Length: 194
Image (cartoon, rainbow, N blue to C red; front, side, top):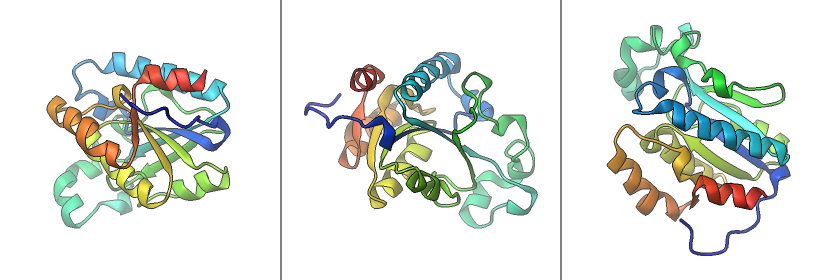
């Protein structure tokens, strides 16, 4: 998808963030297993090249039921299907975290605001983030905006992101996200990691 020659990826300074690839969100997609399989492959390639894998999931503890607009959006689901211990908020088994991976749980849309993700990334010397997430209009867009403000190099892998509304995904990938991130395909990512 890029037209310029991208800067090389330094795996030691890079993390692949797998965002909201959790059971309850994946089931909203038409063919979730195909997407999980592609992300599993990308995780293996990034891991074998020396990169870090990070997982971001959304879930609410008993004392974290949100107020305001987020509370209106998630409502009672924060106590049930979106509870931190619910099977629906767990990362899909096929791509489950391994020892040494970064794992954070958020209570807002973006990956940074309610987590210690930035502290964990900075402690490892990471300045480049490869993003894979569901949904493009939610966690991906919010994390790109916030990550850009935090001075990360951002790489959005277009076919490792999905949105329940395909036209919204396409619009964001083609028109909005390239303003603050490099947008590439999974094949382009693999070529850069080779």
